[in-house]
Image (cartoon, rainbow, N blue to C red):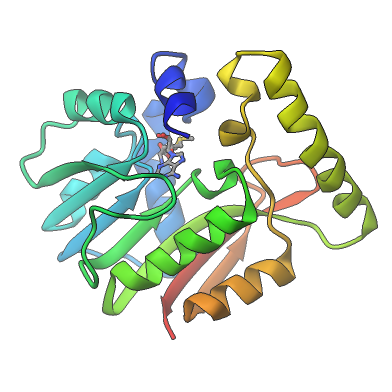
Length: 224
Ligand SMILES: C[S@@+](CC[C@H](N)C(=O)[O-])C[C@H]1O[C@@H](n2cnc3c(N)ncnc32)[C@H](O)[C@@H]1O
């Protein structure tokens, strides 16, 4: 994950991260579609990238802890977000190692879970969200979820074979499993949330981004 995203950090940001000019509007839309307008306290941003949303978070919250698996992304974010109430920290990619239990009043994770290379890592991150949330805290999370039915399942099974093969044949980071990601199914997500002891306080569906055989899902999660 680290090598893939470090390689992409020097590439075209709009293509791999999202339109830099739309970061603040997408953040407002994420909160708005989940019926919230959180402000104050500590916000943990998971997968901050080059800081597209971090400046807008710094205006809302007393303190922002922005974490990413990629030191190169964090370097870019530090250069573009000078706000004194933001602290950038690296994480291993499977756990939010540098974030303390209960540190987050609010957690934001946007355009990140879809890139995690397998279900086990997604499950681990959901458990970590529960661990770092303060009592009464909320996690605002976007992820594409596989549509129900046989075709999406078949597509995912073929993709699980094709993605590692393509990665072996090419050094292009865009072909790496850590960029292509894994799509969880709706039942798998339900089970993972229950195992993480997170409950869905609000939900909304896309179509913000077109994902093959998947729906863009937006969740406000709270400790169960
Ligand atoms: C598509 S970008 C989105 C960045 C930001 N959330 C935004 O919307 O502008 C994905 C980011 O997630 C980071 N990332 C990927 N896997 C990660 C992981 N396991 N843990 C933390 N960050 C990760 C990448 O380094 C990259 O900066």
